[in-house]
Length: 266
Image 1 (cartoon, one colour):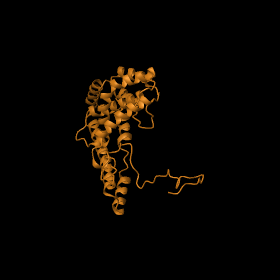
Image 2: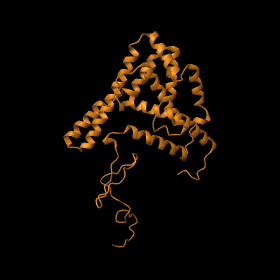
Image 3: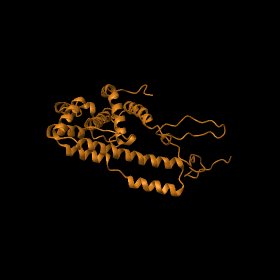
């Protein structure tokens, strides 16, 4: 797919750096998705809170290395580094809680419940209804995970909390001196925004694989178009592509003929 495409030196450097980061990014992405509601975790600890901030920073690194537009997904990785540094040096727990609240607790439960009620009353298709119910469950899981984190942060004495934070930051490589180096590295040319087809293709390959690992429910799967003549079922469409029903081909001059060009009748 990328045969013959020029590969600038900086793009090669970005790819090399991402190959080293990729295993950690994949672990971090799956952990973020679990925290964000794909799973309802029974027990979360201070270590998990630090891991969540670490995972968001790893996601930020991946975004920069592969030059992904910031509008796609915002990880707030640099803010996570600052939170970890202030938490260790100044005991700033309030900043962490405020960040978790913004990321995990602003949930439109009432809105989606209203949509479910309206769908039930309108006789919406079972698949659409199940998607709404699943969406609400994801939001509820996220809220419960948030409360588990708050409980872990609130149940310890300040000294014990500080000890656990220091230990977790050491485990994930975010001691204050390391954070300074990480922040400086993210200001280097390696992390600048240099969009390129090769980087975009690497991102699509990685994300398609990860999305398939978390989208396991029947309501998550793309539609399978059926050939009604032969009864043959075509392979599943990509996750990024979905047929819209009813679809009408508008390329014929019977529809697409602004200049009123004469057409030959069949």
